[in-house]
Image 1 (cartoon, protein in one colour):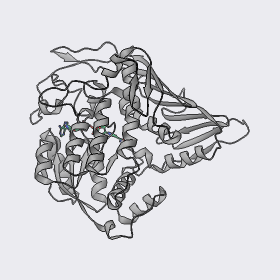
Image 2 (tube, rainbow, N blue to C red):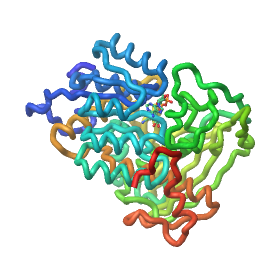
Image 3 (tube, helix red, strand yellow):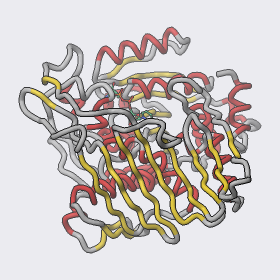
Image 4 (cartoon, rainbow, N blue to C red):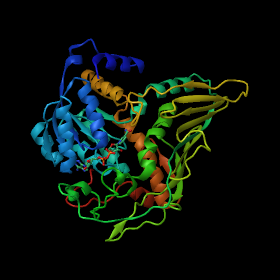
Length: 435
Ligand SMILES: NC(=O)c1ccc[n+]([C@@H]2O[C@H](COP(=O)([O-])OP(=O)(O)OC[C@H]3O[C@@H](n4cnc5c(N)ncnc54)[C@H](O)[C@@H]3O)[C@@H](O)[C@H]2O)c1
């Protein structure tokens, strides 16, 4: 991306521009851990900023790694060295910036190691696979005094910023309820046979601190989202973005009570044998979060997505004057209660409007600004941590089959030892759960 495009994109988001000091010209040695689909999307924006020297890429899949290195080279970013083990990359390259875009069960150990190595970190959401991991990431970041940006690009996306301003203007009235949702098409699931891991993939290191399952092409790449050993299904994946909008709008640190139900009534039973595997995440879930002064509800369905409901993804803020929808490619729209009033709409301003549609360039510019000025970034680790806890709390309620009381200040589940125990999990040796 040209400097000019960056400048305009940053200005569009209403950010303070740190372009005057010498810091604005500084370049940073940058490494990527997890060079799959999303990691390369981030790295491309890092290269486009013109302020990042790519020194190393790390992936446990040699094919993915080679493709990533070839792409960096062909896109004019030099020839970074390749690594299979992130610990070796950190020790040898000593990067100033580390991007972490591995599956969720790796975020905590890799972020903590990067922070301890003194690197500034851009880590993908959700921060942790379990709550105590996320808490440990926050502590490690603060102890090392490094900048940590969590990949919540919707915090800075111009149409989200505009919708938040509209909400805060009072035009929606008093908001008593928020509905967050992500629906997709789907149906009964067909299991796939387990197989030998493809040549070049270090499957043991991919599983890492999680259980060592037989390899299945449903898992890698990308499909791990729907396996609870490594992620938390659609709610853990998509939910974080939309739950973050609720915390952003309300300014509250978290809910007081959470209840979640759901299942696999359409996808069918979980199949996990030596021969074949299905996914195991729920195909639909409904979670209710009680806040001071309003209730938020999350809904996802991996079936029955069609035109019956106007929007497939986003957040509805229901106020005394009307409903505000914040969406993705459909921008934001206010539907007034007054039947004679015209809806008010703002288009999306995604930097890559087709396909992947995101605002990573803005989030990256803000990350560099925060490093330059030693300030907190817009999606600081504490923000990402709090937003990531919401689906993780809902998953605990879903596993226990009852509502849980949460103290959002102390970050403790109240009066429920079984639910509290699920804030962490056992790691597979030799990996040690972060304390
Ligand atoms: N912010 C967003 O909008 C957004 C969008 C998509 C994905 N993401 C996040 O990006 C991350 C990656 O998602 P993806 O879709 O690219 O997944 P992916 O499976 O395509 O890529 C992940 C890569 O990590 C590698 N990996 C696994 N363990 C590793 C390890 N120990 N060390 C190094 N590499 C390892 C895998 O081999 C794979 O190539 C996830 O956390 C996801 O939630 C965020």
